[in-house]
Image 1 (cartoon, one colour):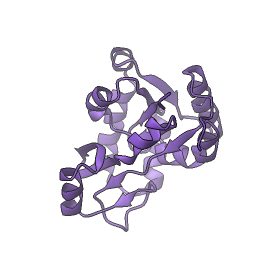
Image 2: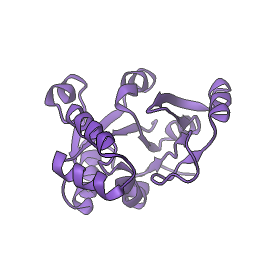
Image 3: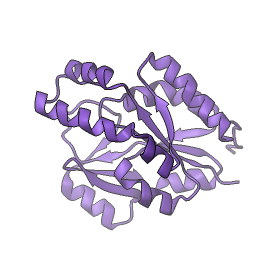
Length: 193
């Protein structure tokens, strides 16, 4: 039986990278791989464990069909390696760090995907963004406004997205993520031989 794609979304600062980092081993125990994204950004940037390439290299890889999913947002290219298709075909579940704007295309390619949006209280997000000190105050205000789009109940209902709140301790968010996966039948470890 094929695996299922878990499509995690959320605004910058919501804690996706932190959640993915602490979830790697528990997810592996559920037969779930975590895909590393290919991103066009400088090697000096901080954040997720991604494969960083230049814009031309990204375009070349995209043209060659190296990505199962690929999109552009915030001036950057993001790609999910096509190797996820092998994992899925082998019965493994795969978690990807996705984009809300790309969800319809991802769902078109993987109709059975499980969309999860990581949300965070606006004041908690403001504190996190200020603490990162990566952006200007105007950029932080823009991100806070964008956060409101992610927490919109109408959007969650229309797109049938599962909401995962990360306004409290990261361990609680991890436990809720694992609970959501079990609720959606993603608890069996497939045969990895």
